Amino acid sequence: MLTEYGTKHAVHKVCECLLRKGPLTRQNVKRYTELSDEQVKNALLVLIQQNCVQAFTTEQPDGPKANTQYVVLFDNILHRVRFAKFLTILSQEFDQQCVELVQGLLEHGRLTLKQMFDRAKSSEKEGKSDELLVEGAFVLKHLTQRCPASEPLLMPISEEEGPARKKGSKSAKKIGEPETIEQQVVEAALPMEAMRFSVVTNVESDVGEKEKNSNNVTPGEKRKHDVLELDECGVADEQSVVYRANFEGFIRRLRHKADHVRAHLDDGAANVLSAMLQATSSAEKKVKTKNSVPLSLSSIYEEVIKSEAGRNMTLDHVRASLVQLGELSFVDASSDSYSIDFEKIIEIAQNEEVESVVSKRYGRDAYRIFRLLSKSGRLLETDKISDTTFVEKKDAPKILYKLWKDGYLLMEKLVVTGARQSQFLLWKVNRQILWKHVLDEMFHAALNLSLRVSYELDREKELLNLPADKRTGPLQDRYNRIRKVRILLESSQMKLDDAILLFHDF
Image 1 (cartoon, rainbow, N blue to C red):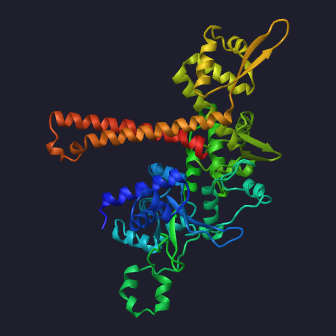
Image 2 (image 1 turned 180 degrees about the horizontal axis):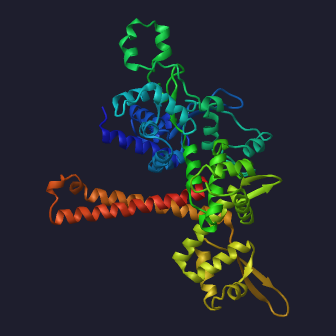
Image 3 (image 1 turned 135 degrees about the vertical axis):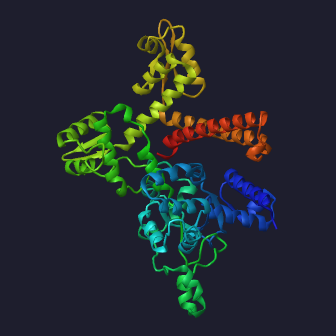
């Protein structure tokens, strides 16, 4: 039997193998990791239970179904470091009962209603009942969902239907950009919308009484109510309903909470934008979306005066704030309706984030040069850049070369022939290429921070395990130091993740 450390080691090896190799069958995972079949099976079960891996099969055009394969859900792994943020959002919007419900789902990955009831029964702090738990599940129906299919069939995409499917993909990718296997598998595994957010309520409210009388229940009735064990794929059979957290719902809320544009707005416009976000949130179906659903002026005004900050705003004040938001391109106005331009808001936030990085890393002159090229969106010649940004002509080429070398700029050479041949260097910012480069740097920085946290905690492991009464003198000083280092590094991780959300998720 594997120890806890042995299980963690096997899970780590299997997950790393799938990340490096892509989708694999269980036999291939066993071959690459050199683990036993039982170890691979248990590791895959753990990863599926924690929503980090999805099983699937593919249909061959001229043959039978292929063997079951497993693919890593990269985004879900990233979301694990955001669980603290998810719970913070919940505590601001819902009561403690709902927070505990989702906390159990985040901790255990997947739970049935019966397992949720058992957790509630074991922590009867405030006399919570099963009925309240079900009610909480309904309240959170867009933050919890039924688990995806255990082993969806991935259909091959034909040349004719490919573009149409890509256009409507859940990840809102641009037309012509191919979907990854991970995205296709996630879409194929999702339950129908009506079932995805439904909650089964035909469970006896008094679980204890049900268990007490279970011997008097016929097999058919018992199968209707009891929760069966997880099958080999890590989900319950068709007689049970298993739930998990809906990460998309949390990411949408993080996007709404992010303070990207408040610096550009006065208090009135900020209140109006917040009210529009609140009014349209229930109609959103995906994270990456260009615009919100349109709202009339009266609907916006009604939502604004619901909040304490907007209670004293008049209709004329709301109308003036909408004009300000429209001038900044944060809101699109069409006849008598208004919608939020998410794409523009995120674009401005991304620009400011990269400009901040350039300023801190290369200095103010580089910041002015980069900002000019970013806003112009076209090729500019070296002397033109120097004259416009008031950077010394001898310094401008050095700064431009440095930014180009580090991947922040594109350079093109223009040769002019004539009586005397001349060569000019032209520079520009290509956002699509640069954003991928910046995100790659952020992922590397996140890895380095994670490794540093692990190193610091492992180095002082014995000290951290000492009882408080034995940490005196120099030991207490060392403990205070490692505590400050941990807070600093973990705070840096959270801030860096905010930037990753901006470029990867929003």
